[in-house]
Image (cartoon, rainbow, N blue to C red):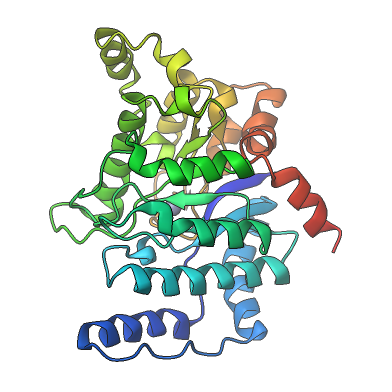
Length: 340
Ligand SMILES: [Zn+2]
């Protein structure tokens, strides 16, 4: 089985995102929030059939670990109540996709975060998504301010209520920022990669893994700048007397393969142990074009993995085995959803 651990519902029915716009407008105007629009099963089917499902089939992947549109989380908009209503609507929609296509999608939750609001307010949504929806992970935004970095670093006890839940449920968090509202940081060109790199570095300089030995994080987009600068982080860990970086991080931190060219994948597989790499493409996502050098979509990342000089056993780890290990509930949910 080929499991893509990083996909977002970027093709959701139009009224869903339209409602978000109305919700924010109503909040700004101090008016009551508009009711959620009806979305039919057929509208959901259409949005998936011609979108992510079509691409899965074309590229030969089987299952996508699926979460709400990341840039659309917009944790900097409105307030905590607005974020709660929006996260609830987005997660419910993911649950409906997984119910309509149980063999192709398994859910991951967005959290109702807000800048400078304790992540304690995310606990009820995590409970709901795991217990009622069968979700297997969460996306944790290290910067709910949208590019201004107003919350404490991920090593701060501020985040521990979420970490306690992650360990309790055996669910990993993907460290994933949302839209940038800071014009100096382009959302997908800079802010995402900054978030990945900063998140890794914040965890490295913390005692999170001493306090939560079983916790697991996925750094998306190939780990941002981290694998390329692995020597820098090894040296920084050494200078700070943190011990060996591999021993410090690699029981708890994993990297996905959302790297959109072969040389980048070669570097990732050379620097990071195979046991710490999870297949992902983030389709249909940030980069949708075709690479004129290869004639294939940039985000068709399976092609790059296929070309790596690795054994079949190692490729099976990247494509399936590691995901089943990192997402502790995944195998049980696969069994449950496939039996439907
Ligand atoms: Zn993403």
